[in-house]
Image 1 (cartoon, one colour):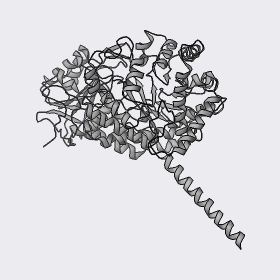
Image 2 (cartoon, rainbow, N blue to C red; image 1 turned 135 degrees about the horizontal axis):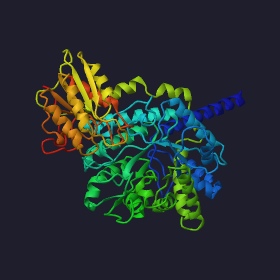
Image 3 (cartoon, one colour; image 1 turned 90 degrees about the vertical axis):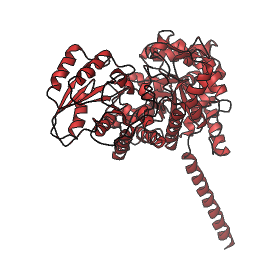
Image 4 (cartoon, one colour; image 1 turned 135 degrees about the vertical axis):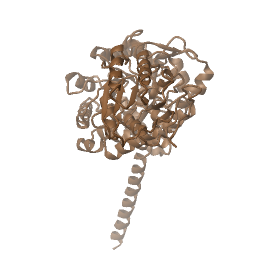
Length: 603
């Protein structure tokens, strides 16, 4: 009896201990991913216990001790594959040991994407040390930026800014994380933390939450929380701020010449806020910040990445470069040289893309720099430690594959689509209305939809609401070129207007509206028929045709308008045109007449 009693007591103690360990482990796995320290790479996430941190620290040290130079260099490179099983992708993962993958091609199928990601991870498990990959992608308007055929298309960030609702910002990040993680992604390159202080900048535009640093900061932090809540890495971009540039860094090297005070008070404010919120990574910009380093773009500048970002702002997470094949870099430095410069400047991961030659050249150049002493081993080990710490913390070694069937069920759920429509509707901004709006949907009047792009799709939105006949006419056909209206296109639009009782004209610009579109609107106004103008991109189109009587902003298209359409936003705009209550407020200043925060409603 005595032995049985002792055995029973011991059994109870073991069970209690197991329960405590299990609960502790579950609690830890649900915590936000914390901000890691460069000096102490395994520093605790907020609320973590020291025993968990020690375990991760020991695992990282043990793994690094087993790694050769080639494997360490691989962790610093983000490979950009073509979709599909091929020898080069297998070689990059299994032989070169790249540490992360950028998926920047678009597919129509969540299943296809999930299967490809699982294949990449399977290859990673077959490498010498079996280190899992980070799978990343640009997802500024949700997983649909990568899988437009099935994933939920979410409004652009400026549209979210127009709602003035940080809950929406967080919900957008949550929906993105849920759908992306179901397919095997771990890392979203958002939020865009650029303050759009120059509405004529050609690359940020509606990708920004707006021009107010405090509002941008609140929105960016809300998105970080949404990603963290669902265990996904986020990345604020483009440090130290791309919102006041006059050129697009995809095509040229741009400089910004504002003062240090403007830098700190305006452009750094959102980055400082997300750092305080524990964001895990920050993406660099290929722009020269003259106030800090007049010679090198931020991506290659130690003064910016180490001095400003690490030391002054105290960022301890992963620094990842923007795409290194952008012409701001390639026109001035080769892929290999730029990669070495970026790592020496303080970057942890180089986003290698472009041709197979460009990507392998990145790896070869880093290995050569390590061999000849141009890349310090301590600098290499610092970044590898940081990267591996996140991989262990996210439990990628145990959970590198995802359920392919689950992805198809989660991606593009009806609940997500309904919320996207609600956010879009609340973002639509009525900027001007001289008694023209709302249009009456119940009449038999014929409506003409004239548009710079997506005319047929927008006309379908009108047909879904309006009882009368709907005609559509698109003024431009070319994709990837500036959308403008030729004389012949304008003449045809006027000819079509003769058949209609009322006109909805949709214009598009990524900064200033082109002259042909201005002439189009003014000639439609001259017909004397009711004209409603709708901006599809930059909300400042009205400045080109100030005589229009009704004007609505949608924030639906950025400067890659032909591949990044947001139908949910123009559909919401048509609802407002026909009577839904407009709630949006301008996130940027258009003029003294239409300042920041301006927005009308219906009586």
